[in-house]
Length: 82
Image (cartoon, rainbow, N blue to C red):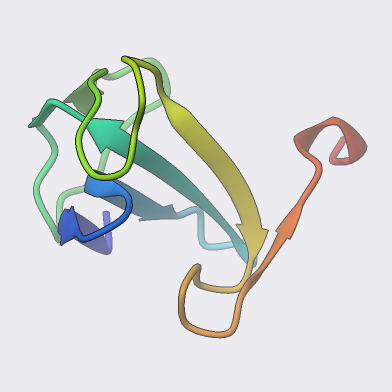
């Protein structure tokens, strides 16, 4: 976990570095469970879904990026990754 914090638009959010060039972003959370610097495992709960930031209803904003989101990374379609 490289970021576990607040963003004015995303609200509470988490960014995970997968150490293979990919990063995932989880935003609009109501509660953050994973902490910055923590190693997390597949299937482990990292946050609670919510509607913080500029959300108009409760949901999870998920993004897959090549490079670090909000720091030069660009989003990609998760369906194109094998």
